[in-house]
Amino acid sequence: MRLSRQKPGRPRAAMLGVGKPSWFNLLFILPFLIGYVLLLVYPVFKGFWLSLHEIDQLSDSSEFVGLANFVRLFTDEIFRGTVWNTFYFIFLTTPVFVALGLALALALNRPGKTGAALRAIFFGSSVLSVTIVTLVWRLVLMPDRGMLANILHALGLPSIAPLASEALALPSIALVTVWWIVGLPMMLFLSALQQIPQDIYEAAALDNASRWRTFVSITLPSIKRTVALVAIIEVILQFQLFGQSQLMTLGGPNNTSRSIVMFIYDAGFKQWALGYSAAAAQVLFALMLVGVAIQMWIAKKRDAE
Image (cartoon, rainbow, N blue to C red; front, side, top):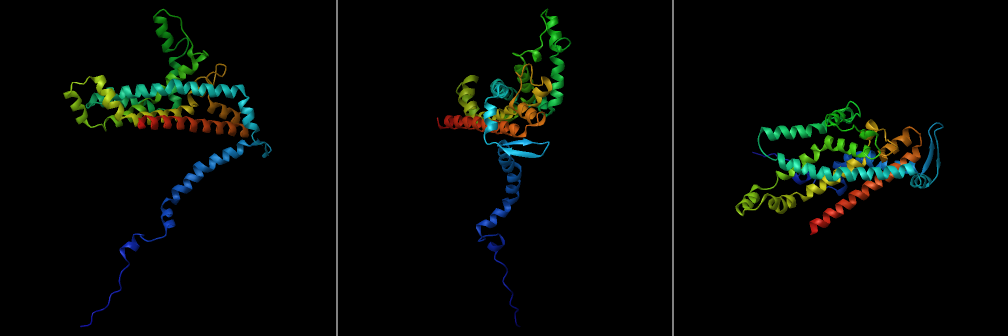
């Protein structure tokens, strides 16, 4: 009996792509690269190109002016004030986010329905829109009929108007912001705390270590990367302060709560100075990069120690 000769099949290695040219692997990440370039890289370079021009949107024309928009920015007192306001706001909020988020995580890192309910309550405010949050707090901070005014009247104290005070407007917005999104750092810290092996805590308990000693020697070193992560995230987020100031104070009084993003918005969409607005956006981008780089350097230095 004559056996038919079968054609050998394709080698398994060839079917898996082994031996293909190196550029063949790029096809798998090509969709990501296209989206990254179109949505991130191109807008950055386009914004920088716009910042070098004086643009007249009515006549749809532009004139190359080089660094004139940047020179004008750094001589603009209002812009310098917004830079100070933004850094002051970051100074007010970021340490509170780290400290309060960690404190809440330590307090609520326990099993049971009560802990789960409290975690949901604290995290629930983070999903609210900025419009709802600012509306609620404007009602609280109303000078005559707000909840704060009623409490002060009940205590026999004169009412205050925090949002109309140059000294209290930005701290009031910082308070609202902390109340709004403190749930996010809390959840990040909770996730980090639950990754710490319980055996370490049991060994510390056998050695009669106090709670403070356990926190300093075990908990804090174990979550130091999360502390750095939360700080970096909050710095980036608070650099982008806009909605709270826009809806609560309109940048007032006397521009004391006006942020860089508000300045960019007003220059681009109210004054129609698109090139000037783009220059301010480039400065904001550079400040964010510098701030994040400094924090990453500090975190790496601490890890090395």
